[in-house]
Length: 200
Image 1 (cartoon, rainbow, N blue to C red):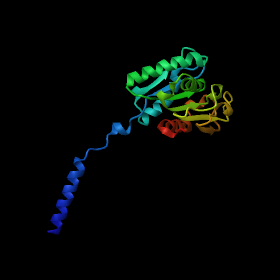
Image 2 (cartoon, rainbow, N blue to C red):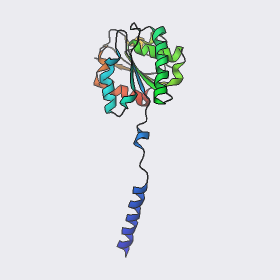
Image 3 (cartoon, helix red, strand yellow):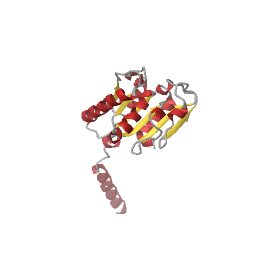
Image 4 (tube, one colour):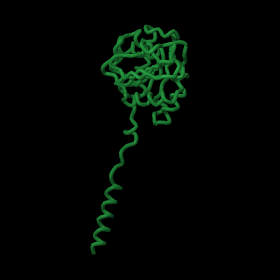
């Protein structure tokens, strides 16, 4: 009799657990669209390896956007305005209220300009900069954005003192040159952490 009662209890418990709705995978994987900003003289396709790795980790390939800057000199005035229009376009296409940004070199500087000089901070949740001369724009990251600045003592194009930002998570590396940010596996992990809210 006791065995029968135990079996009935187990069956009821099993039925209850099966009927419970499983957590939505879509909800668990809900992320902001990501905008990639290349540096001076660069192209959007330079982020292809980074994009591929993000897709492997669950980012939606349809929400990864590499902007092609018309001004290849990295000029903040022209690139900032182009980025402003591009962010609005991405938000409209995806229906998301915020985007995340990854900027390499001058692209990171352009992101800081957009968020601090053009009122773009309200549209951005996470920013990760890679060897960016941030100090050409300012010394402080926007408070409302989770900001990560990654730089290297082996980067002889943008020195660490130009990349550091007050209020950001500053990560100093060694042995990574200015272009290796785009394919280095350690940097890739830091990018993923930054996009997952690891910035400050």
